[in-house]
Image 1 (cartoon, rainbow, N blue to C red):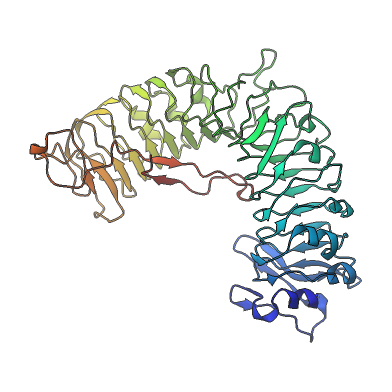
Image 2 (image 1 turned 60 degrees about the vertical axis):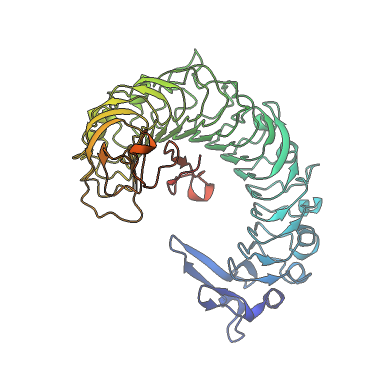
Length: 520
């Protein structure tokens, strides 16, 4: 352990926050460990031993380690070492081959070196680590392919190799790993064809979480044929079809992300004719993202998927039509985005039960009619409402009940009437877009002071000033230059792009933030 200390910087660099961790010979080595609180949970940190005072765990994450691990001392002198976690020490200079072939003891059950600047490839000798259950090597600079010929340890339950430069196949290397439960392989350059006859329907029956996202060379079927699957993230791939559900498919699936894949053109979310909603394979889904896929036909009604909280079907090629009436049954919805999805008709008036909505994005469609009064009177949790770039008309409803609104986009419509009393109670409103509504009049009043960070826009750039907006940072209107007042003009049509931050496994696939930008 002392060799590890001195070979990776020792007292000069080992630290966590304002504390320096160094080995004190006045205390036994088995007292060199403690429990620390990281703001969310209590974590072990340091050196830990078993009842026979043999070192079994070394845990020094984010501790400023530099250089490389000792050449042979860990393997020769710590034969009982089971857990080695050195995550987030980016100044280490090891390569994977030397770690596996000579530096690390094969007794390990857990190896965590996320974000440690490890280079090289995984050698076939990793098969010697027959007890290895957890392998976390994400956010490094690893290259090459995952070893074939059954070289991967058969006891593996957790595999994290995301954000590297891996290439090659994924099916054959993992086909025999029957104990796998969680696999994270996103943001690499894997190339393979996934089919039901591959490992995706084979003996990997315990797999519950699979992330293969942002591997654009992966083709074939969306891998849904795992009976225990709860999370599948396959966005940013070139998968071509959603398979028909079978007895091998999971009815436990909660998270399904297929966005950013225009090659995905085949498949459906309509339950087979011989099933009911109680046996429907997607009934447990809480998160479904089909944004920017190539799926066509009618927009899925998602009937029976009443557990949905996050539903994204923006930028899709579904046949133009009204918003499915069945969406009114999705009473647990928190986020709903149908942006640029060819929706016509009116905003449903029976969405009064969608009281959990935080975000509603219907931007860039062909919706007509007025904003239902019940939508704003019952959606007390609503923070983000995007109804811009439609053909909505009529007077604006009262937004008083939606006092938590932080973003309200109504630009590019045909609204009319006086807006003077509509926004004064919205003290949290940062984004307000009203421009390109030629029939609005009045003065936009607010109880809050005009702050630098307010991003408000309206048709106020004329001498007539159809809308008076003291807090607007820019104004817009379609008038001749002779009638214009010299004020900052708004960017084009005032589009705001909603950035859907991809949920990550270490956030339990929950949204952490909402981000907005003026980017096209």
